Amino acid sequence: MTDAELRRAAEHAVERYFALAEERFGRVFNRVEVFFDLRGRTAGQAWFPADGPPFLRFNLELLKGNQEDFLIRTVGHEVAHVVDRVIAGRARIRPHGPSWRAVMAAFGLPANRCHQYQTTPARQPRRTFPFRCECRQWQFTIVRKRRHARGVVYSCPKCQKALRPE
Image (cartoon, rainbow, N blue to C red):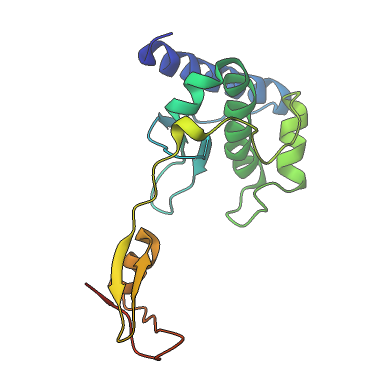
């Protein structure tokens, strides 16, 4: 399948799960936007922004390598998060708690948290950024680099001096 065909297949699977939820729970669910912008090891995510409607994100590379399972389990898993949030009617629910597991059971799916997909082709090489103290150089990941930019101070355990970008 081409990338466009895989995207359409995933969007149809999302629609099928919403239709199944409407049948099983006897209510209408608003449809969500679907994006294929995830990278790395994460197969899918359900997002619930405070200032807008929920949306789903999927990893196209993992979809390519695991088409059948992805369209059943991963898509169902993420739609179950949206259905669970709508049914619960509140923002603070356990992401993989009892109500989510009940939605997964209604979908006829196992309530697994993690996938077992081979992620080597989807992995991005880890980029590091040099930081320095008085006694040596350190390599920071993008996470620590961004935290430093927001004001977090890291210090060397040996010389106790603040680490600075080179």
